[in-house]
Every structure is written in structure tokens, then in C-alpha cells.
Image 1 (cartoon, rainbow, N blue to C red):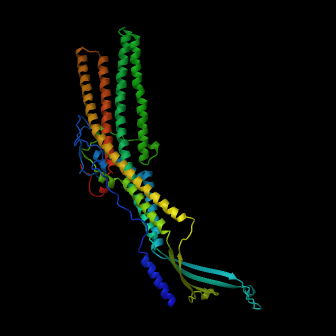
Image 2 (image 1 turned 30 degrees about the vertical axis):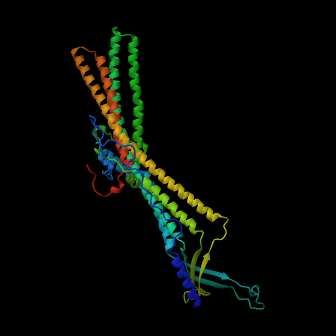
Image 3 (image 1 turned 180 degrees about the vertical axis):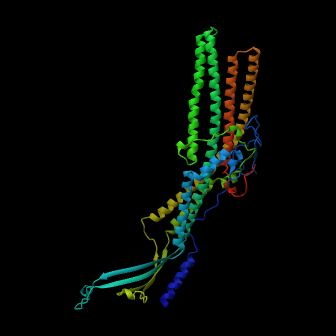
Length: 491
């Protein structure tokens, strides 16, 4: 009875000790020191004439909807994003990694929070030799069977919080995978939007390039007739042919890029490249959001999923320091066994005649410095994770600043390109009126037409850049995942 009391008292003391945990507690990351992600931008961008020229307002209070791509008001683009999020292997991989992390946490939680209980059944046939056991002249029994049934229970006391630190690290791993899943979702959506914008731009550029080829071909025909009539030299005709072929040479590159974009879009949507049909996208049909979030550094650090994932990696490294520290201290395991041992299987369940209970205390003494070296390695990994987190924050702030400046610069570029396109259009109209009045040749008017098409191509390029950098800003700010389920996308 005294032994039972002593063991119970000892176990109670160990249970009380288990309230401690070794290693540092994870410190909450400090917010960025600055109040701006980069150089200040104007409150509003300049306005340009034509599609995509609306003035955009920057406001730190403007939030991002969870489905921010719907702000462009393009159903074909929305459908592509939806299909990509549902069918892309990228999302399937990220989701599988999250499930794996969750189940690893569940497995560890079950094995550390509760005692391990195992049932065993043993049956064997044996023969004993009394003389081998020092019993001379004892009769030698016949071979006999032994049956043994038992239930074993063991429980390792978490004296210094090792198990809790392991669970803390696995929980941080689950958080990391959750944020990586969201980061994959936001990146995939942004890639689909940017690819869609690029597709629309290339389709418009292709149409303009084909119009230039047609104009050059008409000029070539006029030049051929004039050369036959002696109005121009053969050199002028050859020069005109060179311009025509140069215009034609631009088409294959644009067509190649267009097909590449369609194949890329198919892969994003989880389709094979051969299924790259591609619904035409009209660039002018895209709506440019008029209000944009400016992004505060403190909000960026809490909203970008890649920064939150880096924080989770840092938190797990902190927990691993606790695990390595706890390995330096004693570990105590309590075990108990209850069973029945009989020579007749029919009597096996009649009574429990075999039992044991005991505890094991293990204190590391000498491991060649391995345990302390592992702790130092864990501290180094912690320092690495802290530096990686800081780098991720800095990179995120840089991306936001770059995107803000790009949107502002795009507006000024589009303003100038749109004005240039207007001047080119006016010059072409004047040339056409002069042709009607007989004051200008058709060939000269076609040259003005080509200049107008080239100016329009530059305007389209600036317009597409403005759409793309607006999408990049939404992505750089985190993509609005925190607003999922909070309502409809605002107009």
C-alpha cells in the first residue's frame, strides 16, 4: 500500500511540473516603422480621354473586396478566374498540403494528450528443461501451450512542455499552409486577370497591325501603278515594298504571343494547352476601378498572406527552440499492464492474474554534445526565420510602393498617348478631306492613316498597362481575402 501511495504522490508531483514549458514564447512582430509604403503619390491620378482614362482616387480607407477581379466588370474574365480557382492543379496542391498539415497536427495531438492503450494476445508452444534452470533430478514436463492476453497503458508526462511546443509548432505549420493556400489563390487570380488583359491587348494590337498591312499594301499598289506610269523611280517602289514587308513581319510575333497567352490561360484554368480556344476579350469593355486602396504598412503586414505565412514559419522555429531545450531535461513515462496467462485458452478470460505498474525517468547525461548542438541549431533556425519574415515584409512594402507609383505613372502615360492618338486621328481626317478636295494624294493620306494606327497601338499599350498595374496593386495589397463572405463586390 505504501508503494502505491508513493507512486501516486510522485505522479501527482510530475503532473504539477507539467504546467511548465521551456523555450521562449513567440513575440508578436512589430509593425513597420513608417506610415507610407513608399514615395507619396497624388491623391488622384490624371484623367485621359477615351477608354481606361478615368481618374483614379487613392484612399487608405478603401477596402479590397474578396473577389476584387469583379471590379473590372468583365464576365468572360470572371468566368476564367472561377474556373482557374476550381480546376487549377496549383490550388489542388496547396489544399492537399493544408490537409496534410492538419492531419499531422491531429496525429501528434492525439498521441501526446492521451495515454496510449494497446491490447495484446500471445499464444506459443514450449518445452522447458528443469536441469537448465538448476533443478536436478526433476521430472521433465511434456511440451505445453501458453496463452497470454494483456492490456497495456503508457503515458509520458510533459514535464517541461516539449509536447506542447511540438503541438505549437505543428499548429504554426497548419497556419502557414492556410496562408499559402490563400496566397496561391490570390496569385492565381492575379495571373488570370493579367493574362486576360494581355490577351485583350494582343487581340487589339493584331487588328491594328493587320490594318497597317492593308494600308501598306494599298500604298504598294499605288506605287506600282505610278512606277509603271513613270511617276516614281524603281528605287521608290522598292522602298515601298520594304515598308510593306516590315509591316507584315510584325504579324507573326504578335500571333505567336497571342497563342502563347491563350495556352497560358488554358493551363491556369486547369486545361491542356491544346484546349486553348480562348474567348475573345475586348480591352475597351473592361471597367477601370475609380477608387483604389493606398495601403498602410501596418495593414500590408497583416493582410498579405505571404507575410502571414512567413510569420507562421517564424513561430514554428520558436517552438522548435522549446523542443530542443526540453530535450535537455528529464522525461518521465508511466506504464501499466494488466493481463491473464494460462495454459488453457478456455481459462484465458476467467481472471486477470498478471499485472505490472511502473515509471521510468530518463535524464540525458552525455550525448557527445549533440543535444546542445541541436538547441544551437534551433536558435539559428529561429534567427533565420526572423530575418526571412523581415525580408518578406520589406519585399511586400516594396511591391505595394511600386504598384502605386506604376498606377500613377500609367495614368500620365495614357494621357499623353491618348492625346497623341487624337492628334494623329485629326491629322488623318484632315488628310482625307484634302484628298477629296484634290489637294493631297491617296498615298500621302494612307501615310497619315498608318501614323494614326501606330499612335493608337501605343495608346492601347498604355491602356493595357493601366489595367494590369491596377490588378497588380490589388494583388500586392493582399487581395481582400479577409473580406470573404462579407457581402457583394461593390460597384
